[in-house]
Structures are given as C-alpha cells and as structure tokens.
Length: 213
Image: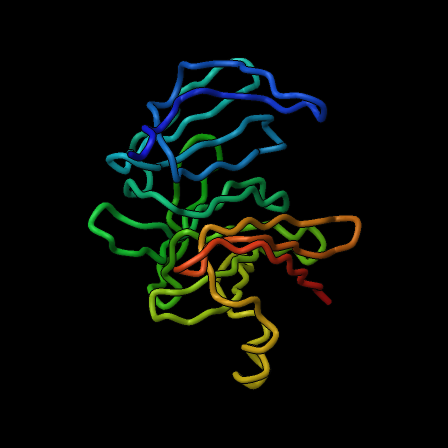
C-alpha cells in the first residue's frame, strides 16, 4: 500500500535534520520547489493529489499562500530560480488526465506570467538547474514525442543543447533516457551533475557530468 503524502517541513544545517513545521501547504508529493535567494524564500507549486494550483512561500519560519491564479494545477513540473532575472521559472509537468505540458511561467513574488508555450518540448518528471556562468536554465529528459534530449532556456526560447551536432553524435553524448532523476549545478567547476532516476523498469545509480563550454 502506498503511503499518503506528507505536509511536514524539515531543515538540514549540514550536520542534522530539524523538524520545523507541519502547517502550510496541504499534504502533497511530486510538487515543484525552488529557492529565491534574492527574497530569501522557498517557493512551492502544484503536486498531487488533485494537482493543486496554489503557490506557497517559506520564509524560514512559516508558510504563506501567495497565489491561486497562476499556472494550471499540475504535478511533476520543473522549477528553478534564475538569478540574472530574479525570477522563479516553472516548466512543463503533467495534468491529472495524464497530458504532458510544455508551457513556461515566471514568478516574481507577486504574479505568475506565462512566457512561452511549446508542446514540442513538453515533458514531466524532469529536473532543472540554473547555470550561473552560461546564464542558462538546463533540463534533461524525455519529451512528449519520445526524444531523449537536453534543452536550455535562454530567457526567450527552449533549444536542444548540441542541436548543431549530427543527431547520432548528440544521442551518444547524452545520458540514457530516464525520469525522476536529480540534477545540480556545481559553480566551482562550471558543470551540471546528473544522478540516478528510473528508466521504466528499474532504478538507476549512474552519475553523469555535463561540461558547458
């Protein structure tokens, strides 16, 4: 039996976990979260069950609901903070009927604005990172059309990384297709690290590094 979603909030200080709160957003999983370093708040959107369309912010002490009129409620979306524009960027996800989305939204702390809609890159269960050196947002994953690709957001458009390379060459350079993986940007080395995931039949434990030049 699957365990029900939780609504507790915990903090890691580098040595141990500390339980902070059980109030705030309703119990959920597969939601999107990003940290706005300029305003000092963590932002949460969507999730399951019922694909809520609410936006919450955590200021280090308590949760506050800040919007219920933004993107359509969804789960399995990607979200990250863009330090150059000082905006939270949300991309993709899945509706309760199983439809995958390819829309892109920004959150400035006051309102959501849709900045792009491209079903060509629609996907869910992906991860996003912000590359502060290249000033790009990077996503890996399988698109609605079944393409295993890595794409980048330049603030206006999504484009495949390495689109100028022959398709067979680019395919060989990518990690094998997967969902539910994790990615992080390492500023000191200017690389993106990808770990694990699920390939449709089993969990993965491989680690990949993307070097942006």
